[in-house]
Amino acid sequence: MDFDVTFDVIIVGAGGCGLTAAAALQDANPKANVAVLDKAERACGNTVLSSGSIPAAGTRFQAEAGVHDTPLMFEEDLLSVAGEHEAMHLTEALTRTSAELIEWLVDRANVRLTLIQTYRHIGHRVHRLHAPPSRRGADLVNDLLVECERRDIPIVWNSKVEQLLTDQGRLTGLAYATPDGDVVRVGARHIVLACNGYAANPAILARYVPEIARATYGGGMGSEGEAVEWGEALGAGLANMKAYQAHASLADPHGSLVTWTVVEKGGIIVDASGHRFGDESIGYSAFAALELERPGPFWVIADTRIRDATAAGQEEYAELVEHGGVQSGPLEALCARTGIDPAGLAATLRAVRRFAQDGSTDEHGRKQWGMGPLEETLTATRIGPALFHTQGGLRVDIDGRVLTAAGRTMDGLWAGGGAASGISGNRGSLGYMSGNGLLSALGLGYRIGRALAKELETSAT
Ligand SMILES: Cc1cc2nc3c(=O)[nH]c(=O)nc-3n(C[C@H](O)[C@H](O)[C@H](O)COP(=O)(O)OP(=O)(O)OC[C@H]3O[C@@H](n4cnc5c(N)ncnc54)[C@H](O)[C@@H]3O)c2cc1C
Image (cartoon, rainbow, N blue to C red):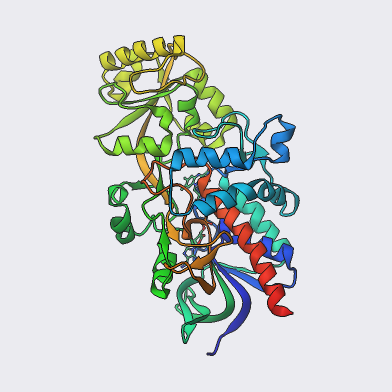
């Protein structure tokens, strides 16, 4: 078969998974001939949109902060939220590699990460989220892009991979289209699918997760499910296809994220009647399922203390405050502006303040009240539920080798991040814990890079 160009390894997708895999491969095997293709004209996938929080257990940053944590504690936390699922081997492998990943990113890939100590997010028993100081995924991706450039790894934008090429059943390369419509055929011994999941593909959503298919979508438009389609056509197995991350608090109409920190610090979620309808402490992904069951709109109610403490640590929320997305005032004035029923909200606040005062459990099961009873000057942010990303995908082994439905390794085909099965269970939005997306993306990317480096070394000798 004729190719326009040939590489040892082609990575499809320049997000968190693809860039980490490329840099980790080149770090472990500087002779590796690797290139990254991306259909977008610049970095704009989910890693860019994320808050860049990667969970890890047993890092030196945790030790410096006096946080005791182990991979086993982390694995237990993940499984207590996700339950049994179809990729338990990944939960174990990714928790075991998590500290090494963070330290490699900082020490060898020059990615700026710090341990978040102002919030933990639901499910994590200790502080273990590591993120860029800005808490923006865009900074994480920028650092990875600079690192790939420093290592002379070509990243080719505007290159939409359309087909995987095979010869007598053996994977030989791929074809991508340029913006002018030209087709370029690239030969490769190994192809890494790092092109994310199927959250922007309504047909695949309708097949696996119909309950979320019509919700607002808050993720990248590049997640069109090609990995699942190509993989299935070649006989790959799929796993955890019913799992996804939803978010209960996308600001309406601003479209930015109202961080769940507002809720964790004592905020509540009400509907137009001013009443709550569930335990907010089940987390932002699981709470979205409660919102999807009833008509909106919904509001996050907090107070100016919580607003200011949250805005001080999170730029995206601070911008929402600055742009008028978070209204404030005493109850009557706030209800007049938002349309929330004042009598209903007053009754809700009386009850919530009582629970927060004695630290007791409310009728929904919520036990944690953050900074204590809400004060008189309230804040209200109109929100709605959204789908952020899918967590099911190609069945892979612990190093990202794609497996058939029968569990056999598919020669030369690798997948990680949203393209592969995640670790968020298989029960809709219920199994997702903060950080599962990036742990799967960067963690599996790192493991793929290392494993590929070894395979290339072995095949060269
Ligand atoms: C708003 C938001 C906030 C989030 N916050 C967090 C968080 O704080 N922590 C966390 O763990 N997770 C978070 N997530 C989830 C997390 O961002 C994703 O799970 C993770 O970024 C997936 O990484 P990836 O590399 O697989 O995909 P991406 O970062 O999306 O990269 C995939 C790339 O592949 C390219 N591509 C797709 N198809 C093709 C093709 N055919 N040819 C060429 N290129 C292609 C795309 O253009 C894209 O650049 C969040 C998600 C969203 C939407």
